[in-house]
Length: 177
Ligand code: NI
Image (cartoon, rainbow, N blue to C red; front, side):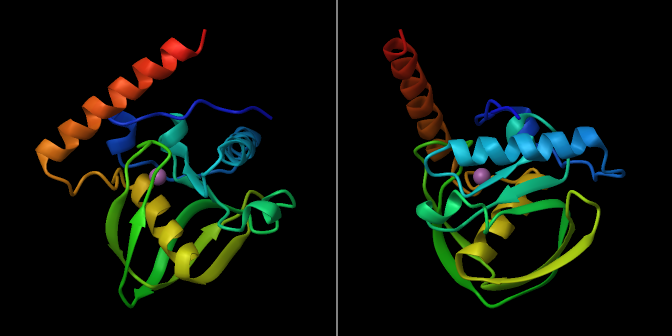
């Protein structure tokens, strides 16, 4: 397994609608295993979608459990072709994104969702989710539709964020001797 590079805003792959996975091959299983390791390797990542590692495919991994429980991977969801069957209620939450470091955006989401997907073995699964898990599922499905939490901000705010991100990347590059 490998830890993959996370693609940062404003890479075009992040704004592309991802393709469905027709056949779950060994390559697909390897990619989702690598995405899982990549998510767990980040200090704050509770979800990662395939476009965020440069693959425009409808796949995502999520684990919203507390830090101590992440080791046993009990809360891990590996979703291929996830699709919402229902989404009800309203909730507001300030979300972050691994492709948008340092940015928090208050998003309007549905409070309860039912989501169907295939697991890496190709079995159809259905999950009923509420709370933070429901929010994470919607955030990741947005990634697969080429939508980011920054999209709703004004052009001015987007530009300000981009300048800040570029500066942070420059500063980090300087520190990494
Ligand atoms: Ni994200």
